[in-house]
Length: 295
Image (cartoon, rainbow, N blue to C red; front, side, top):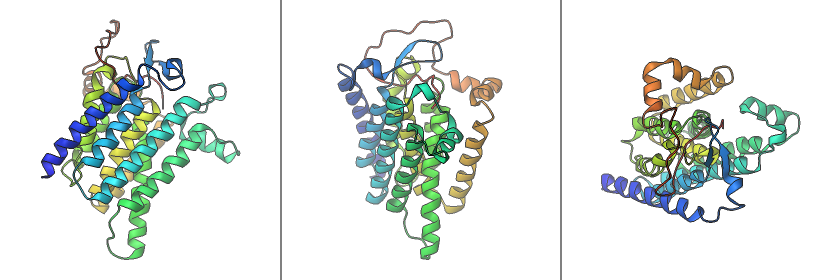
């Protein structure tokens, strides 16, 4: 039954991703220009993939396997992260562009609430709420509270980390799929992510669409929730440590530069992408990611 439900989750997620993307294409909220950005090649790409992928993840999660509380928690964290990400995508004040977690937290310390700061607070709060909903009670009340705090931080931290990786076409989709593999055998599985990512991949790699913060944050929150609710306590604590370490490193080190210098990472990163000297092909159907903007 679990395998069948995981398959259903993948199909529903893929279908919802395509359906939402196509429904948004004729008349995007606020106009197409509001959803258009310039990628790393200097070419225009659409961020409509972001809400489409977020919707696909939520839809697939709700019909997928696993306990009802875990599915509700995952859907909540994913939807909230996607929504706060879209707000940051569309409402960011580009005249006073504040970048990085340090920059947004610094602005908050000065009494300025940027859209990025709102996103940090919103994803943090929703991640903690999702953890409270989905974390089963193990042991004492103190142990349970500690589990909820670790899980909430893991959800929010992973949402931010995947967004930091979304700087090239397909990178965040590939990273999310790989990150969810270790917990794919958990009761909730990862069918929703595989379905949504497969539906978005062609246009993402073809550099017609990009995830933006809305899609990347949603993917990361989904992955973080899968780890938070599907891994043993020691593994979750170690995973949170890794997420924090990578986030801090991102303030000093370019992930793209590291990937470019590491042969096997470079091969994985470029797999399926357009060669450097080719023009984008016309899309046969509306869809997916393409990246090129920092989160």
